Image (cartoon, rainbow, N blue to C red; front, side, top):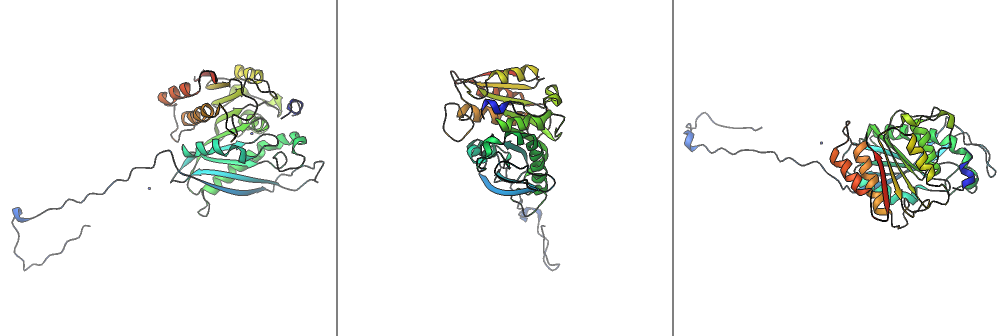
Length: 322
């Protein structure tokens, strides 16, 4: 996303016998014990499934652009990657950046699904790469927080629908949101802004992001547990943006600085030196703060997060787990 756009606005025995038969002596009776084998619950890594659903919000419009007139609804073609195993699992909604697509983030989201999370990735109506004038539509970021909450609504509804691939796979009270770039701006707003805060959100992840929506309504001190990642060689959004936000956050907060990383490669499917750190540390974060069991993070998981977030010459970590 160009810098200029950042300034514009994420589970009987029966018996038979006969009275004419002599009673057997106790010593002659053979007893066979019947045991029921206990099948252990599946554990990660899980096989994953992928499905694409077209979700239409008929209560909100898609604004007109230079290439198309206003439309009376918002259509969100949503890629869902889920553990192919009995659930339920926490839900993560991931928001792509300006001229981005869900398809560019399938490797990372599949890693999260293998670890035990259902991941929904909507393509936003005006800012995804398939839209001819997407690069000029950054202003629609103000409508994208509503899209994220709508996707959460629909995923929770799908969890109750026996015809849905995610039927009974979702924990509706364990929800995380993540986003990259303009999708991170979307995520910031859903997490803590007066305009569109969604109180169902339990954990937040920001990837090379900037706050753009209704800055006067920001309440960074009320943010759920958050992980931020940012490349210190980002040519579009300087890493100082992340530093400034981190300083305003209350714990728990984690900031992974990706040394030499630019704006997008560390989070996309293209191989990069930062892939292992990003995959391991983000998965650890979800396991710490979006565990199916509500309660304080497991200290062993926090220790693993600290270790996985730091790699010589690849990344550094600032953290206050509270």
